[in-house]
Image 1 (cartoon, helix red, strand yellow):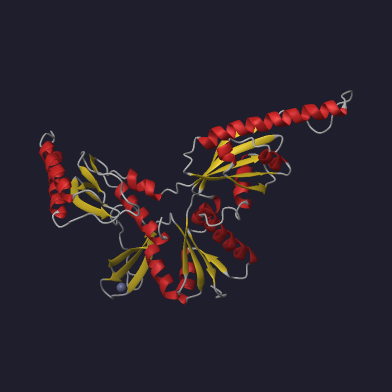
Image 2 (cartoon, rainbow, N blue to C red; image 1 turned 90 degrees about the vertical axis):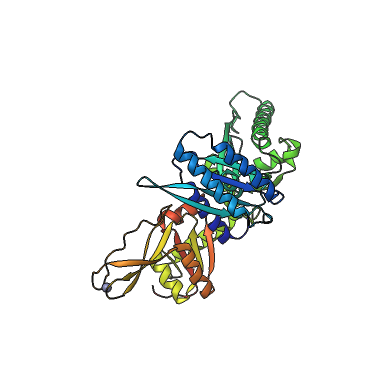
Length: 413
Ligand code: ZN
C-alpha cells in the first residue's frame, strides 16, 4: 500500500461505511473497474431499476429505486473510471428516530479493482476494499531444539502459532549397562526421526500458504540444532529454497516464535512490523533513560509538538479521537477539546463556556490524527503510524494513550 497517511484515511472511510445500515436491503455498493464501459453500467442499472419494482415493501422499493436514480445521475458526468476504478456506495441510511438519510460515498481504491460488482443489501459490501488493507505477505516461522519445536506464520503484523511438537530423544546421559556406541546410535536415530516429523509438519503448514504469498522462512533455536535441521534438508525442496536465515533463540516453545521475530530484524528489515517495532523500541529506550527526550499522552505530546520540539510523532492506527472547536455564544471565547470518535455522525453536546458558563456552539470537528498531522507538517516532525496488531503497538494504544513522541530536545514538559 501507498503512504501511511492515505492508508489511515482509507481505513477510516471503510470504518465509517461499515457502521452504516439500511432498514431493508436497500444499500447499493457499485464497484466499477477501469476497463468497464460506463454505458454498460448504466444499462445494467436500468435493469436493476426494473427488477426493483418486484420488491414487496413499498418503502424498500422506493429507497432502492431512488438510490439507483442517484447513481444514474452521477454516472452521467463520468466518461471513464479512474486508473484503479472506483466504488460508489449509496442508499437510505438508517439514522435512528425512524428516519433515513440518502447518502453517497465515492472511493477510489488504492489498488486496481479487478471485477465489476453491483451489490444490494442492508449493509455496504466492503470485502474487496478491506482485503486491500491487509498485508498479504506471509513468513514461515520455525523454532526447534531436540526436545520441542513450534511452527507459526507471520501474517502482516500478526503471529499465528500453527503447530507444536515434542520429541522422545533421550538425554545425553546414557543408562548403566548400555554401550556408548549403541546409545549414541539410538540417540541419532531418535533425533533424525524428530527432525523428520518437524519437517513433515512444517511442510503441511507452509505449503498450505499460496507460494506467491510465502515470502520466506526463518528458523530459530540453539546451535547446532537449527543448523543440523537446515543442512539435513528436512523441509520440502521448494521450502528449503525459501529459508531466509537462521537465528539464535533461547526459547523453542510458542514464545520462541516471538523471540524469533525479535531477533530476525536484520533479515526482515524493511518490513512494516519491523520498522514499527524499532520506532517503539527506540521510544521505550528513551523513556527508560528518563532524560526527558520521550513523552506520551495527548496533552504532553501536543504541547511539545506545538513548540516544534517533536522529532518523531508516534500515532496508533486505532486512535479514534476527534478534536472539537467550540465558541461561546455570549463572550465568544474559543476552546478546543478532544473526544472519542464514534463512527457515524458527530454526537457531542458541547459543554458550557469555561469563562462565563454560557452555552457554546461547535464550530469545527476534525479527526485528531488529521489535526496533529497538520501541525507536524508545519514543524517538520516525522509522523509514524503504529498498528495495534503486535505487542509494542498494543502498548502504545493502551498504556500510552495511543500517542507518543521522541523529542529533539528536552523541554521540561
Ligand atoms: Zn463565554
